[in-house]
Amino acid sequence: MIERVIDLSEEGAELSVSLSRLVIRCAESKVTVPLAEIAALIVAHPAVRYTHAVLTGIAAHGGSVVLCNEKRLPAAMLLPLEANWLQAGRFAQQAAAPLPTKKKLWKQLVRAKVIAQARLLMRVAGDDCGLLELAKRVRSGDSTNIEAQASRRYWPALFGAEFSRDPDGGGVNSLLNYGYAVLRALVARAICAAGLHPSLGLHHHNRYDPFCLADDLMEPFRPVVDEVVSPLAACGTVLLDKASKRALIGALTGKRFELEGESRTLFAVLERLAWSLGAVFARERSHLLLP
Image (tube, rainbow, N blue to C red; front, side, top):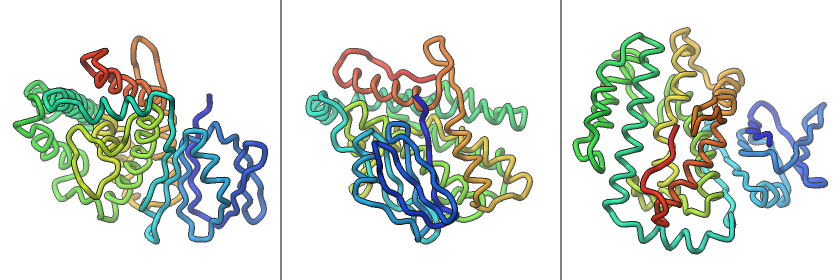
């Protein structure tokens, strides 16, 4: 099935639903997309209007809706409440997961993230800056904070010594923030489809964050966004505009990963990852399924 990420940020539009299809009417055009093909709808333009059926229709088909603020950065997310018949049991298993299990899973995620960062640095700079060696030293729960140690080497190597990662920053940070927000929506969607709750995290815990588990599972995939932003930054293209958004969404929707001997899309990989986590909670397997 085709998986689409739709970004409405350049002009106003009227959205409605007809015959299980999302209808997008702009000034001089009309586009229809099957609801079943929508992975995420991102609404950034203040003049976008939609019916109630748009929100419920996308949610009913397992998609997510991301609403952006006046800075065109994601401010809220709508996810489906009912994903599958396993949900109630999965919630209970997820909530009862013992701390040692969570720490073991976090170790796997951190190690995968650091390895992905190392491989990106090798492609971009020809040197992993010692990240592959750091990845070998990740312990249960990342008790020695290898993730932070890797970040202190990773960001300067990728964007220069003056760069500082800021979740609320502009320039390069605004491109990263947008890409991560789209990635987060796709991960949260996969989590809900697997019957899990996105707020019950493995490592991230914040009473004001309803998507802690999405923040956990997305970590190994952040370098997909970083790889797009790196050449843009090198060329001085640090505006969050239509072209940069297209590049970021294109990377997320077009990226292929090797998993279980097959080439799979990010959507398929995230789906398998979320289901493997549910299987760990159900004590049917011991590790996450990661590319």
